[in-house]
Image 1 (cartoon, rainbow, N blue to C red):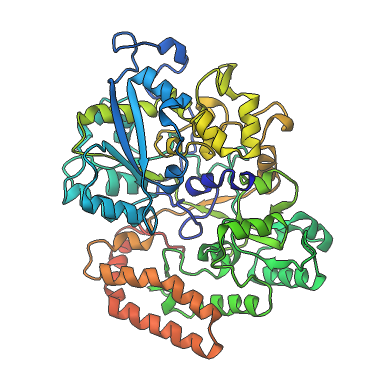
Image 2: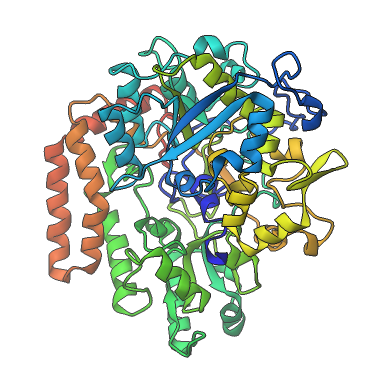
Length: 601
């Protein structure tokens, strides 16, 4: 279990990471100017000083949290949440407390799709959800995710979802969505308040109350990217922070190979391994960052002021030749792109690689020992190593079914979950069971802290039922919005505070962020493919985009004589798919608003 601890955090947060294709998982944010004002105390419309005990009651007259004596069924299309459900939901402390305080019997159900959550969402919406389902939750970083067209069709064409706009206006939390500047631009215009919809049918979730995206705070930074074994860096007498360019990265890999380091099993250490979570193309965005020209889903604007897909440029050969060199010289694991998560984890725990292709400081292999330290971060195509942020974002979506009995009660329940009281319960559990109040702030019990430190997800899920920042019942991490843990709870995530390092299970995570600080640069705009919807070339070009990574990886491993033909064949495919029409539309949008599209130049 230890190796699995906090892996779900990566899918949602990855705070302090690169955007515009510089990340994996589900971490793209919407664009919004940074808010550098002093954070104020959160105000969700609830009495923050009241305890759960003060709100006890068996009916509406006794309890201002009471909603209705009923069951709410939620269909989950988030694999991290669906795979972290309590075995006995009804008798989990958090679920029991929800029932006692609101009257709601919460029933969560998850049916995985053969090809993942998107497949399940598409299939089940096309077939029609079971009549008992009151709401659905799915992944949705922004309107560019493949889930969005499926959701939009269900809302606009199939009329499957309830209009919640009238409920929102006087709600405790979701009324904030009407406030100017609260939502990211993409969330506001393209998801929640769309002009082509006559109401609000899709609620973007996990939108922070305060935009801290440009503020570097070691207490809340998720430092993603390559990490190197500390002992190897010391043996080679190199400063990991000094490695910036592709050339310096290559020279380091050569030095590691020539030195002949051994792993825990006496085998030769391979200089560069895949992501900690297994093989993935996206690790290139960290390890070959300075060679990734197509930073906006493969598109960028060149110095000639024209928009191109990276396959159309000569830039792509710089990346191809570099990766081929690493592979041919044994500097990079040949399974860098397709190794299983389990196998990658085993290799990293046995120190079989000198450098992790990508991990972050809130994974237990990093914070549980002193073995690994961040490398770089490497420079990007602009020649600096600042991390890109687009400001506020979201990560999941809520839609209440039109078929639900009394949709307003369903909405009120999700709104209540996002109040201070609801967030406290969702993230920390029940007072006296999993936390106590210390100077007005929740602090985990020693038992829960120990389980977090051990990575005992099963215990956290079944014996408490709270999210604990993503390491427990992940459903509750998905459904919150207006989050502001620092002001509300005095710590960035449950268990992150403590009187000294011995009391803080994430102490090393914070120390890493302090010792390896990073800077951020704001790059407003959506990825280029966000503007593909509705064009005549949409379907064909989307298929081409989906095939690009596979074709590029094919070029990495092909015979040298075949590389050019692979790239030329894909260039022809782009032409046939209508790339010129798409680039004309992108240029029109860019000329109207240069901040609309995420381009570096």
